[in-house]
Image (cartoon, rainbow, N blue to C red):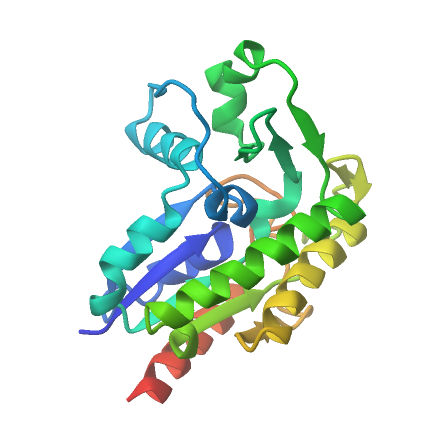
Length: 241
């Protein structure tokens, strides 16, 4: 059975559910922006939340664990799959040069109240793009070192601007949905320019059901989108053979 490593958000997580009977999981890192993952870890206390999974993801972001986790799993990874939806909130830059991802878990933890001098760097700004491009270049070099660049797949999924009932989602993170989606797509384009395979989900299948397991949202897609994504993953695995 081939193994895939997942890094990112809802799109790849939910699409994996449709292929998990045939594909193993060599690793999973979520809620850790690429900027946070590639830069030095933050010097902060370990956090305990009610959910062990949420605790693990937040502590992973604090400790910048992506590269360590990926390096350990590289030898048993047949495909590295990534989406960039975790980047939607930008990043926090700390006074010591470390970064944190503005996740719901970070907010719940209360850590930001203990940190002075942190600055929010929003998605779509020139500063965020510069930080992200630098992180992407370093990340792709690591993929090459681990033998995973040619086994990498990035899924670029446009956000739905309204649910399937026709109700608009409005703004997210202070920006119209279309702008957030375009900014995330721009980040995937940076990876494409660095030679990483990127597949863009057709907008016609990127629809948001009114009733979804994780709640209605612009990046909580239905069966058509998950079917498309799982087909792309299986095709990429087949091309490795």
